[in-house]
Length: 445
Image (cartoon, rainbow, N blue to C red; front, side):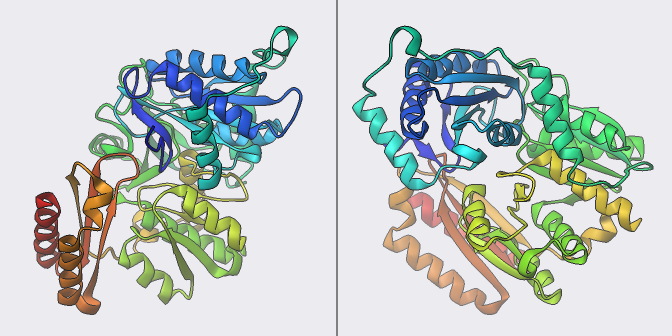
């Protein structure tokens, strides 16, 4: 079996590459690795509303209970809620069934260790080895796991809402926000949180059917939230993805405020309040050069990690830092969560607006984005293509041409057979030309 775990768990086309049989094996193997030797281990299990989640939830439940794990099924909730509840209930681990921003036919399995932390590479490797070998020593009789019924799903939802509201005591009265929930896991939670914080909320993409998640809406399709902001004269728009672990925003004029700009705004706010540990922000190699320039001017250090909020989290934990994230909108506040949380990010962004009385456009103007071109090139073997000599030579030549006026990044996708070509340059035409040339070279390998 090839490597199952990508950048963010196991993901694939539901009922094909991600079959219920595989889901059951993944769950059973993860349970044996993560149960910490407890006689009666407990796992928190949640999902987003896509239709295949019902099937995979049943399979994961079967896998967990078959190796003696009790299951706390919390129903449809965002990924960060499952991570939070894993820690809150002192569960051995948590499982989220979601393919995040991917189209509805896909699905995935994200696994959290004790405390709601994402797995490191070594633990994933142990789980994969056990999937190949097959679990042993299955219990019988009273040793089989049970679905726990000694709590209410409604209670878990409310605990997560209370947790988010406690992250800021700022009254949002006077702010009007459009929130696009992508017909996903936060369709109920996000509007509720913003309303209880005092904002006037216009919710769109908040009617999940199981078939419409991420379908022309949410953080991957900002045209709808932009249009709604302009139509209603809102102060801002917040766009989540299917499992609500990321957030992008638009200002009152409909201009996009991406994850880099959001981090710039929040880093300055947290430094002002004394929350920004060591005056340091953790970003990724994909963050725009403009973020680095803005933070340098503000005397805030930017550390870079590999793409994926798990790697941002590793760096945050290593240094004890308090803010990190990605251009895509994953923003992590370790004090309040162990993974990116789109609803929380939107809440903190609005709190800064309310605190300062400034518009989002004014706050985001601290950063000027350097023109960036990103091209995804479909390939048959992403790992081999990324290190092909002719590709590396082309990257080196592009870097020589740019000098200090930009940068080049080429990396394999963590979840798909794609190589991502990114070029930043102060001259947008030059960025486009170099990116096009590199993409052609990658496609030709």
